[in-house]
Image (cartoon, rainbow, N blue to C red; front, top):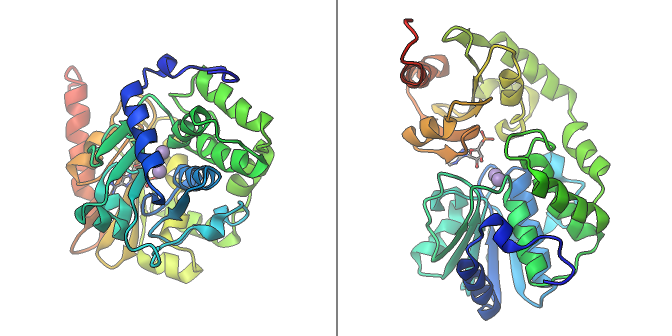
Amino acid sequence: MSGLHWSLSERKIDLKIFGQVISRISDAKKLIICGHIMPDGDCVSSVLSLSIGLQRWGKDARPAIDWPIPHEFDGFPFVETIDSFCEDMVSPDLIVAVDSSSADRLGRFSSFLGEGVPSVVIDHHATNSLFGDTNLVDTSFSSTAQMVLRLLRFMEIEYDQDLALLNYLGIATDTGFFRYSGVDETVFRDAAELVKMGADPAFVAMQILERNRIEDLYLKRDAISNLELCHSGLVAFSYLNEGAFKKYGVKEDEFSGFVNELRAIDSVEIAVFASESKEGIAHVSMRSKTFFDVSFVAKAFGGGGHKNAAGFTMSYGGNLREALEEILSFIGNVLREAQPDNPS
Ligand code: AMP
Ligand code: MN
Ligand code: MN
C-alpha cells in the first residue's frame, strides 16, 4: 500500500477479517460507532476517530457512548457530538463496537445486537467474548485506537489535525503515555505518523494529566487514608465510598488514575481500588506491574480487561472494606499457586 510505512501482515492481522470489516462498513449507510460504559481515553478516541473518519467517507456514522463523558475530554474536538441515546437512529444498518470486551459493556446500545442489527467488534482485550458478527480482535495492539488508525489508513481516509489528535489520544492514554509493556516500535511509529499529520502530544498530555481539580487531591487524601498493604506488601488496596465522591462533587469514574499510583509503590505487584457508585455497588479497578494476570481475577468476578489492567463491577451487602476481603483472598490464592515454593 503506497504511502504507508507498515504492512498489515507485520501485525499478523487476519486480512480476511480486515476485508470483512471494510465490506460490512461499505455496505452500511447508517452506522452507530459505540464505545464502552465508564469510557477511558482509548474508548473516546476510537469512537470519535472511527466516526469522523467514516463521516469523511460519506457515511452517517454516529459516535455513541452510554455514559457521561469525563471532564478531561472536554477540550477535544467533536466530543460534544458523542450521543448517549442515538434516538433518531432507530434502525442502524451496522453497529461497530470499539474497545469493548463484551456486549454488556455497551450499556443501552447492546440492545441493537439482540434486535439482530449486524455488528462488527474492533478490540484489543484478551477477555473479548467475540460477540460481533465480525470480530477484529487482536491482543497484540496496546490500544484500539492503533487498530482504528490502521483501518482508516488502509481505507485511504484523509487525516487532518483534528482527526490525528483524536486518534493519538487513545494510543497515548492506553499505553500510559508510552510506558507500559506492549509499547513496541510500531506504537512509536504510528504515534509519529499521527504527530506528522498534526496531533499535538503536549496538548494531549496537558489535557489528560495536568487538569486535576483540587477536589481530586482531597479525594486522593481520603483514598490514601484507606490504603493498606497485604500479601507481604505485594498487594496494595484502597477504596472510596459513595459519600466521599458526593462530598467533593466528583463522579467515581473521574477518579480512575489513583489505582496506578497504588501500583507504583515499590514492593507492589498488584493494586486494587474500589469506588462505590451507589450504596452496595462498586467498580473495582486492578493493575499489576509484571507477572500477575489481573484479567483472570476480573473474569472470575464477572468483568474483564488485560493482563496488567482489568476491572469489574460488584454488588455487595455490608461495607465495601469487607467486600474487598473476598477479592484479596482470591488474589492471595492465585499468588500462592504462582509461587509454589513459597512456604508462607
Ligand atoms: P479500569 O480499571 O476501569 O480502568 O479498567 C481497566 C481495564 O479493564 C480496561 O481495559 C477496561 O476496559 C477493563 N474493564 C474494566 N471494567 C470492566 C468490566 N466490568 N468488564 C470488562 N472489562 C472491564
Ligand atoms: Mn477502554
Ligand atoms: Mn483500550
